Figure 1 (cartoon, rainbow, N blue to C red):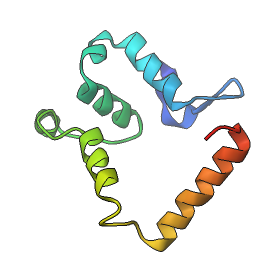
Figure 2 (figure 1 turned 90 degrees about the vertical axis):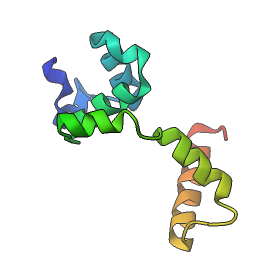
Figure 3 (figure 1 turned 30 degrees about the horizontal axis):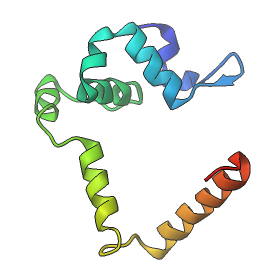
Length: 104
């Protein structure tokens, strides 16, 4: 694996490495990740320090994908809302994004 994958090097040559850049590099250097979102997730998270044993990795491959879980939470958020503090924080992030990017 290239040295640039060390987590501390999120800024390379004065340019911040985005999630998109990191995913692109994983797909470029490890072609097998192109066919498995779960393998891609594991590889991405391992670069962030998430360490699993080989047995845990095998079990992870049979787990429900993260997107399905968060999609279900979003569908149920009207019945089970986040705390007031979290909702306010999300709104502040939305406002910052809206004003910095100009598009919602």
